[in-house]
Length: 219
Image (cartoon, rainbow, N blue to C red; front, side, top):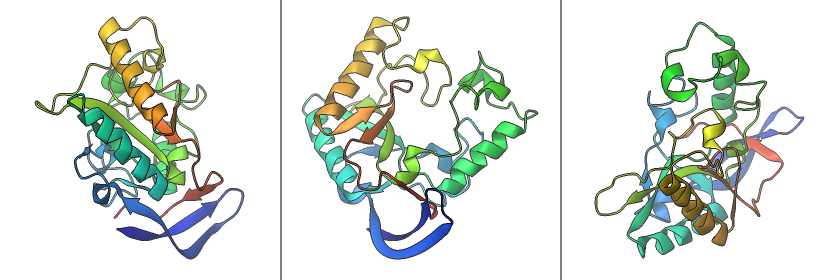
């Protein structure tokens, strides 16, 4: 399935173009497990995030194809990808920024940022006014066992704010470190690069819209 999208051009106002730019991952890799957490309350905000009107994983076509290829490799190991976030509309990022300014809301602090003050999340770069996810070629994911559906130990929660989430953090359990490096190596073989501060965050190296930010809701 493809979608007409609204584009937020860097340094420009929101414009609408009649161009099909995103596809639904399920149409290209139906066996990848999806758990779009910003569509519900299981996330650092603690409620559904603006712009997530459906629990869908939308990506640019080359990103979806590359992810499908990575999944095929992992299935041969008895493993599968589980996706937590894909395309993220700019309005969702705006929601995050508003949330950071409400310092009285610390509902999820113990789980997602126990060692940081909420006021530190923006200055330290954990949350920003724009996200690569809004370009449609970035995905947050982990590994699960296909037989049991159980997630592999990665050392932290997805979206955990702190140094423990650095992909090569050397203080986490050896098994978790090995699992992170396995995920990274498979994703790199299929054209993705990892954001070193977040073991779960991967962007297609040759993303088709590197300067364009989208703002259409996920439907």
